[in-house]
Length: 460
Image 1 (cartoon, rainbow, N blue to C red):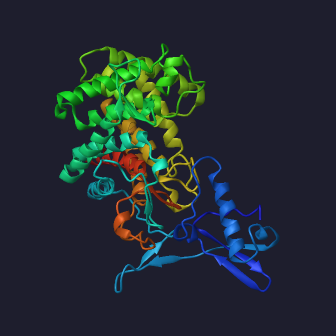
Image 2: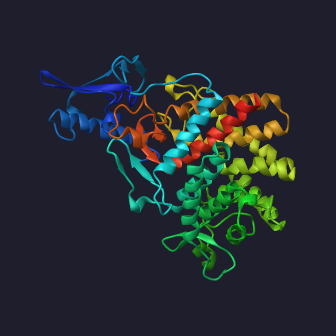
């Protein structure tokens, strides 16, 4: 058994039970809704779930598969949405559109993604954080995170600059109101302001709060919101250490604690927020803080070899604001990392539905594809600014490939045939090729990636 490589969602399994054969079809992971938690080792955890399920179905208990004959098989599938409709071929249980997406397709996908968030937001402005479409179950209070709430507010405002949809605009305002309602001044720094959860002042949530206000547009902010933006920015300065690195929580600032490793994503979010805020702030200290942060984060990249997609975006914008060649150099180096890890560009796609995804997981997932495409969009913008036509073509192609992959993971008529409530799922971006779960940030990252695709399509 150890010599057989099982490709989840494509390979079904057969367990031989005396004179009987017990089948587990390849689409069982989708219709049975048994995807495993995120993180490293996911493929192995999937097998540890898949094989005991088959064994129990055969009446052999949790581990009976170990002493049984096992066989793998593949199937060809199709779906017919209603009587008389043409059949749609399936691959890994889902239809797959191919080719370069059009501007109309991307705009429609962007609208559906934003409408999913808007449609599932409460009157208090709180998002449906998690939705399990096979179970038709949603919202688990212990899972709600203010960082992803703030990111979704940012995504709605950014998307609605293109969509100009009144319903989406009203939800963006309502969710912004919820975020402002959980913002508090740090204990001993009353002039600053932070977005808080469970009494903790979060660096990342506050940075995304500032990005949300910037996405709304400085010209559209009230005097109170401009002051909120300034206080959010001051909290980011407060959390920055002398070498440009960041602390994660305000409590660390109070006790003088320096994290042994940089917090994940928060520094890049803070860098991007400061670069954007510096464009319309009255004080040059915010741009200076951004430069210190950029130096620190380039150092982290040089040490680890792995870029952060928020930092990549920030460096692209900083290069256009400041002109220091260090920022452009690092931005392009980070972009090359992403290109090399994209299936169909730098990495070989083992299966045709991998194309456009990224090799951080197998099968590839939608959210890493979206977040990396945010970064690719920023590198593309910098290449266009520098009139580097070769790089514009390379990154433009990668962005469009990634968007096709993301759009193939968005629920619509053809790929929601197995769901209980197709209307609720419509527009949601599932976790990946074998993950039904919809989480609010899956849509948020995808919307920013779609905006990058629209820039590419508009300019070509």
